[in-house]
Image (cartoon, rainbow, N blue to C red; front, side, top):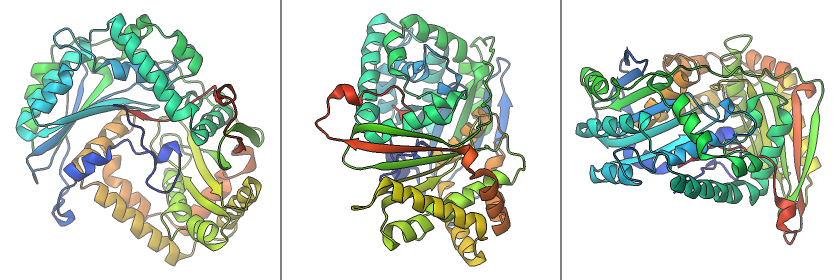
Length: 476
């Protein structure tokens, strides 16, 4: 079963706020006492074939999470084969040279574990959550499918239809997702972030088994992967087992595609999406840097704090002033991600309240932007929000899965895993003046794209609702 997660906050469909961690995992892997959480050293090693291994011991319970991250996702794809990374993720569960379709999952379940995978713009990752004495089960299985996947025409055609149906359910028939994908394709002129993770409809129609086979051969190699293990493990044993199972695998000659740099935007962009829907929807995005390309190292952290000032829960400004106060919005949100491979967007979104229009809501969101640009955040408000954000980040660290995920994500997008250890400290250092500075610098009209969902009668024919783009993270 493939699952697509939405934000826990209201009806937000912002891609950057869609969790890629299944909620079920949190109930299993969230450990009892935050007070017992101790900072532990991450042990690092690289095999001769290029596989990077990162191990974070955590002995509070006899469990572990083992994750294999590949530096491949939709932002590596080109026209004609978009969606191939996500489709290959589906195929990774459909048999290898030694394992029949479905046998991988059966073996994990028989060993008391759970497994899944997720594809994003910059990565594809596979994981198993197991008792700590079952680590070798994970390694044997992942090593088998890293280089020995059996790609049959029958399974390919079956999974291709599954992906097409997933797209129909998650994008074509969801007006807010449809608006988001059209918005992304308009906001980005050249960046591969304009392409949907699940693929353009026309590309899915023409994808072939040979396309998937070539993609697998090129990218699913030890020198394009990071193995992350967190839990009740001995690092030396992890390295020994990794050498045993992954060491014999051959490396591949990797030539990452040249990235098309996004040209400077020369003015505000606007689009109106007409689709069957019950209510309007407003989506606004300002081009902003990621941590990898910011002019100043503190700017991404200031942007993250700004997003929390605006949308950090029921007491944050958008909820307090637009939803409960003026009642202009039925829901409103903002968000930003510092950890991406390429420059992204600072996003605003909202649904007008009954009797209000999309235009009124857009104006109210713009007023909120003007306010943070003209008035420094009050120190007491910043302190309250900072405490909430830091507390949330610390609690996230109490999850084995999240600890490993942060390490894998950072390494996959080309950043140092050690940034995870300094992240909370950097957020704590952000000042009101820095928040005002990034708002003035980046939330400007020449960086802005606005999309308005114009609801059409629900009886409108399906043809009128068929989109041209899509863009969410998908999880198996």
